[in-house]
Image 1 (cartoon, rainbow, N blue to C red):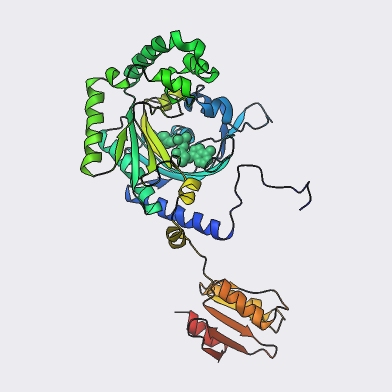
Image 2 (image 1 turned 90 degrees about the horizontal axis):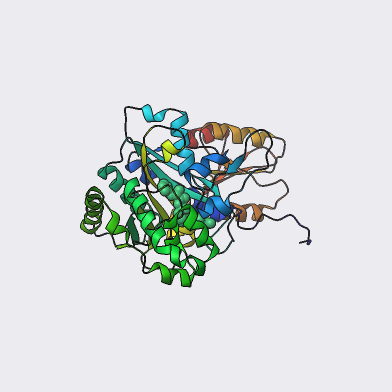
Length: 417
Ligand code: HAM
């Protein structure tokens, strides 16, 4: 390949062949699981006004501070490729007044591409698929929260065919979170000069995010920080307790981690991440949480939400080989038509079969008979139909290997059932 050959951008994926089949199969498994929880699919645009992400995902999040793909301005507005779905789904609910529905909670599922300008490495891409779910209601009650959590766990288990582990934390109501942030700021202030630049910024915008820092020295300092548990209200503690009891009663492996603050600013209450139980060093397969004021932050009514998103490429990367094969959605070819007559009649026969709902594919003219049959095997065609030079037809059942002469009416009788 020439040096100046145009290649796909770093951190993106070309889906074709087996990878595309696995993606299609996985999408079906995940969407089917979401339907068990009453979800309907939504599909917001791939780009939105930039201010949507600034107001929701948050100015202090790494995503908004350094990872968005901002489009070059063309008119009077700034647009950004979506770095996640939650903001877009909330905007969709607001703009279409779906919050006024009498049928609450709204239960929405989605799957599509998201874009983050991250340093590409295994499991970390710049363009990747997320599958996810958002439940929205005037007040997200305990059942709704538990449903969202259980759906996330079951979706990953179904996808991988493996057990998972959940990391959970509880950030509390808006007020308890604000009190906790103040306490953190008090604690970190005297240490600030020794801390990394990111933490200095986080101190100004959202001190909670300091707990997320990966720098060893900062982690040491964070060990002595006040604990969120001491700032939770009685209601918060009761809800967190009920969530933990459910995880225990369903024997879902979990770890309480009060350093789990997640990289997005909108969370209040429950937050969680999902990991492969047998492969704990593998990066997070998904994460989510509750958000009490995202909708009002973008100009909507008081409406709460809870949801999660899964990294689809990570699921595929972590999927055992047998599961990959089982999940693949191979488009089957009912009839592989070899047109030796080459006068266009082959195409007309193919159309007649397609009208009967059969999938029909054909090799290019001039391919030898042996080559055609090898191709039919490779694409797993069920039948091979040969239109000979003299205009007669023969059909071969590729399972029984039986070949017989047939006419068009015979074909209609065979496939028209
Ligand atoms: P998130 O934790 O930023 O949450 O992303 C969810 C999942 O997307 C991650 O757990 C991971 O599996 C995958 N992911 C994230 N970044 C990358 C990347 N660069 N390459 C490949 N996969 C990646 C959210 O996006 C929230 N919107 C989740 C949510 C929904 N919270 C409430 N509702």
